[in-house]
Amino acid sequence: MIENLKVVKATYELYINGEGGKEELMEKATEEAPLVWCHGEGMMLPAFEAAMNGKEVGDTFDFVLKAEDAYGEYIPEGLQELPKKMFFNGDGEFDSERVYVGAIVPMTTVDGQVVKAQVCEITDETVTIDLNHPYAGEDLHFIGKILEIRDVTEGELKAIRTPHHCGKCHGHCGQDSCESCEKDCNNCK
Image (cartoon, rainbow, N blue to C red; front, side, top):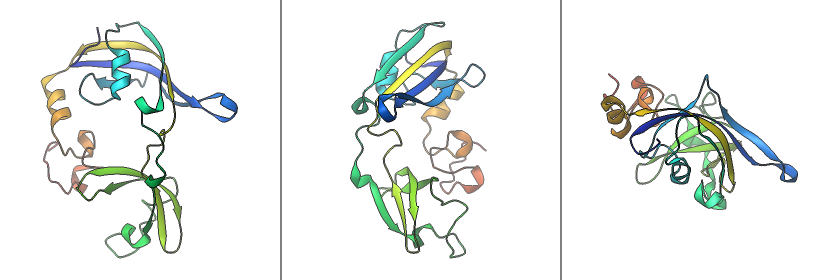
């Protein structure tokens, strides 16, 4: 049964309302590449976990999370125009390999938190980013099936609960590899 500290594998399809009110498939996890999470550890939306509580292997699900219970409403202030020089690489040139329209880039807030932003527009002087989640303002319709439920291992729990992982340990520090991790966390070494 799904409860806290259980690792869950599930298939799912995620739909949002598209044009004309018709649902549009946005994400899909299959039996070959399932969604996997440790229940109760903040890996999933709280309302998603609440809908999964008590389910058993083989159970199906079909529910809608309202925007306010998912990624919140779209906030226009999340769209920000920043100086292009903020996206220069170590050579003093614009990092066009990493920063392009549609790219998701890590940004650091004034309090040091790493957040992901989507690049919306690039001009000669500025880069416009959107700090809203791509599904902000959207109701999320999930349909799927529970494939497996098991106890979490001590190693998995330590990896989940240890802050500042490098990219090999869930990417909590926003880096893609140990070599690029500036926090020197040593969690994957």
